[in-house]
Image 1: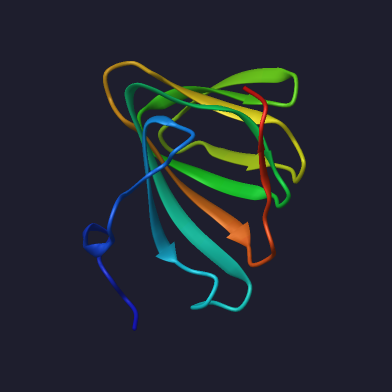
Image 2: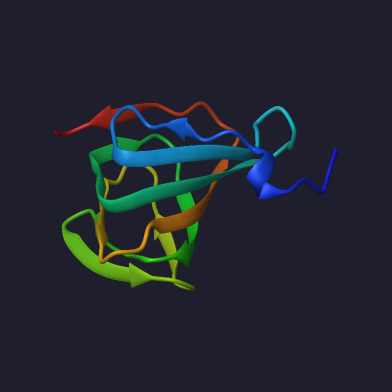
Length: 117
């Protein structure tokens, strides 16, 4: 089953996002504790302010973005890591001419997403 090349996974459009896709690299059915996804937000793209029931651990692979976590805004770039606690409002907006790409690891628990915008 593993290893698999990231380019073999289909890119799914993220309905709430602008110019945003997601690849599910390790699903909740494949691993007992965590799922891993890769997100790509193209230049001019964004994800609106939202909350998730579960925490997120993220590693930035490419590009840069303004990330809002709670009431704070951060500029994150390649090789930065981001922690978003459960139930914390957060959003993303790509900065510059490169796609903002990151790995996102979440616990294998039921997740609910609530949009603010």
